[in-house]
Image 1 (cartoon, rainbow, N blue to C red):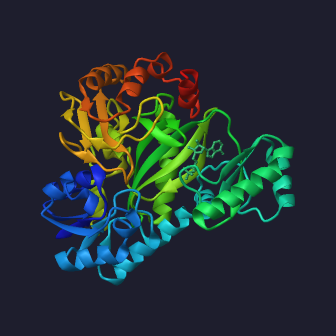
Image 2: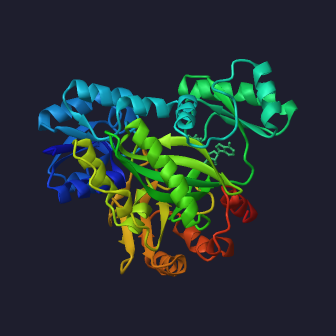
Length: 447
Ligand code: ADP
């Protein structure tokens, strides 16, 4: 097992990783920018190293600084968390060159899944159902028109290097297609330095359902059920739950086994998420994330399995002790991502938290690096913390979430807590009736 893990991240996920390390008896190194000197994960770590000024490219994305921090502290492994360098294959390789373990998948798998065209081809070859579309990249307008006629309008033009919903354009009709192609290419080139695009059937009212997987890198892999992340604003997840209110146990077993089998064949190492759109009872692969995800706690709450503990153990070369039959989904869990943003305009609201009180009681979990007097810096994402609630049934979970949200106090800054207090009392949500557009419609109606 590793002796000392350097946590190459900040915020709630840095704290989450630190907790897993402590329980495993592994020493921890926190790294931080000058903006994060007072962060909770820095206070609680065994050692800490300042790696640069506030801008992420000079600190959390600064590979030479991170290597130096490993060298100084003698860390033998790096946990990248999510975001920053978590899906950077080059970083994983550089660490390996320095005899430092990267706590994540093999570099080749990070690379394949980071290119959406490659990812889709790979998924398809592994027997995972994909969205109908072009066979790889689109090289000309003529080809795009041919494929679009074949799959039928509306179609979606997507960037191979895409992320965060960027480089994606819908063409409702034949007339829109050339324009969608050129704007998607321009946007992708500007955002990712790569203008490769591909074409997909545009699904009109899908849900976003993703399957959690875990593998030991030697052909043993399992799935841990699904998460429903359909409540999104601008392609950003806002509320996530497990299990999905619309998936039957038979569907879970079927799509879960398909994913687990694919990961066995790939000899996938570590945790991963296979994302699908789900419409009319069918699953369509959109991408795979090769990291721990923000919403992983809902899966932990319904399975009782500590995903980061498992992730660290398989990265250290331990065999996966869990069998598929050990994974039992119990009850229901919901996560709300509480952001430092105005609840209606979503304007970022960094600043000092003057009062802070977290809800408690049975089935409540708060993953947050905030505390009374903490100043949320303007430089990074606006996540204040995640409220995760577990109940025996979805109904109990919703009732518990209602009272937990009412207990949660974060003063001094704007947060999205009032939005969640409204959502949890909304009929469509209570009944589980929502697709990926529901939240945007709901927010627009309120204007
Ligand atoms: P990104 O990496 O940019 O987040 P994804 O492929 O994960 O890109 O897609 C992000 C979101 O875009 C999805 O959650 C969904 O809301 C929408 N989307 C992607 N593909 C399709 C599709 N074929 N039809 C309809 N919506 C889609």
